[in-house]
Length: 422
Image (cartoon, rainbow, N blue to C red; front, side, top):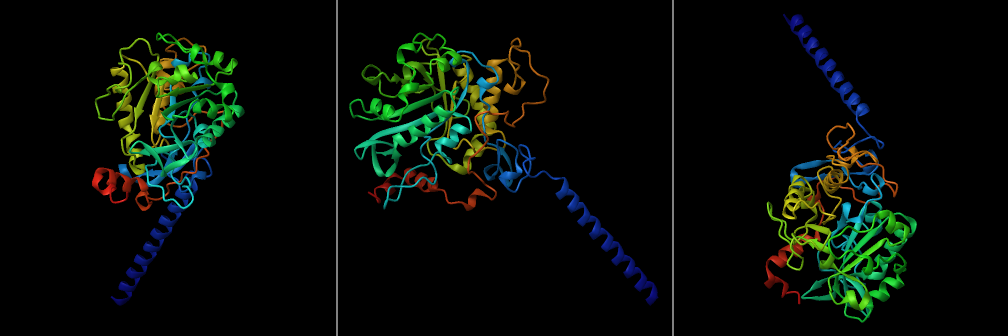
């Protein structure tokens, strides 16, 4: 009996050993067969951005319960590279809200910045990644014009970011390097210095790209084609929130040319009070805002999921079947996979060729003639401007990262707390 028991124990040990080796071998097979070195696609698991393909980075979305890192799209398809030569108002472009308000941007020497943040990479990177519209808040500050958030309507050293000319020089460098690209700047304007903006843009070297107000359509007609704009070097559109500056400085008054919504309430898309009504026939551009009052980085991936697609459909209907020309968001890189880039591809496909994604469009083909592809892919198409170059790397839960916006939300939720600081 003792010998029999010993034999059974040996058999069990042998079986256990075989099972262990089988599991170990399976693990090696999984490792060998998993993607890496730039072969991973959208939503594939990753450990570093180098695992992901062109235009992707490695991130996660704890707000949707997705804590393990996966490949996320980080670059837009430039619609004019697929279907070119149409009027400017026939395209949809990505806009960053408060493009200058960048996490980690250095504060003034000896000053602790105390304000909200809206983006995570430089304006240069934003442009490389397909952003074509910048929302900039400009103020008179320190004897110059600065990019700044306001507190009680003023720019302070604890809400200031940098002189505006620094960011505008980034735009100039991009336009100079990419002679077929068009950029739009929308200014929340608190500059009172006479001719201040005119001098600023001239000193930044951007006056040579200026799209003149006199050539902007004022009765809802089509804009010039992108081909005509590039040929004339009218590749910079600038809008201001101050109506008088159109006559004083030749800077277009924003709500004369742009329809605009406000709020993020599901199922609703009201026009902004300064904007013309959506049924207006005098403006042929539509700016769709999609960002909460208080920006939170680790919630943005959830906001840029199915919620965004629903919002686009709601605003499209509210504007009388007018597709947005500009989609403005916070933290544009954050999503659960395709994000704002996927939705922009869908918008462009529908308006440019009648397809469910721009990837199905065929230059020169009749409207509605779509390439036979699978469901719209969240992966970016080839972008001649440059590959993804953002520094974003969320390989661990964002809950472990310090977010200054959380403190700001707490303070602004209880205004009496702010008085403790001032």
